[in-house]
Length: 386
Image (cartoon, rainbow, N blue to C red; front, side, top):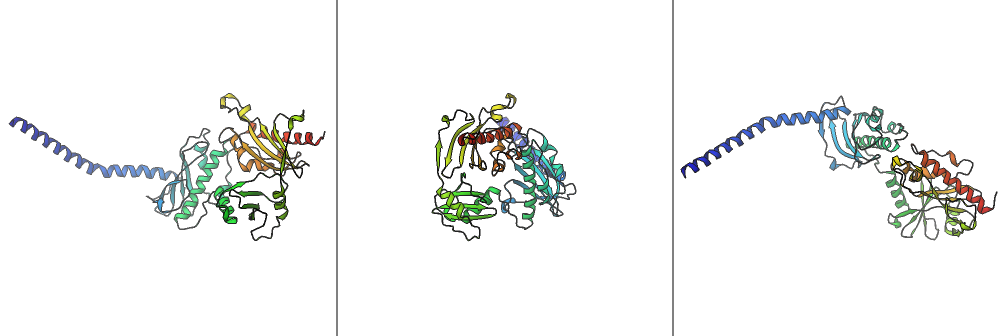
């Protein structure tokens, strides 16, 4: 019994001494480890701010910053370093950007990404010295528009964040958010829910028409102006812009289906056709883009691009819209971007091919143009024009 008690006491003493030694070791080494970790962190920050004299983490939870900002550090001389997480061709595209006290970029670096083309590795070199105005002048790289465009946007977010942290005011809303706010301000009774209308009437200088989902009215967009109209056509906004004719045309608009099987020469790309009461034509068309024509190396989807297009009887495009597509994400998928397909609006058979192509997506662009040409062919057939 005495031997057992003695063994236990020895074991307890050994554990106590070991714990004491470990605590002492930790007390001695913790500052060294912390210093090394701090030096490593500062080394990463110094890559984008080489003249930095020391950095302190900023609690970004107390500020309203661009959504891409995940970390922020203030430099001893008044600059900032930001870590941004964004999406290019893939998600988790991580960028670090330094912003000098004069609000210009001191450096930008891609920390990690799932991008496939590699442009993000050196693209940050273009950012040094740029400010909130000049950063947007940087050209995206052909064939890597989504990747390099996301890089530019993230650096712009860093520049805006630096202004905000220094007490400035910056509009960090996205284009979609700005549009939504303008629509709601023009027609509050819509409760913020709108659908952009596909236009089948030639309404001149009106850029777009949005319908309230609760049927309380419409908002007509003319340049920078948002004009509210109630469901019966009464103009609600104070404006000197006369949209009365456009409103009348839209309210009176109606369409009738056309039996395209009755026309033997109708292009096979034409899925359906209809005509408005005023004699304009609407076509649903399928385009054999990369999803159909691409090679197996890039795994084409086997899906057509579906397009809706309206044209006047004289052959001027009123509206063009990409209904659906399954082109290569981040490349050909840009055919679904409004800035691409609205380029066709106002064009005719003589100049519709002059629109800007989708960078790196020649097959998609050419297929889209071919589909639009089929609308002009169908128009001639329906009008009996040789």
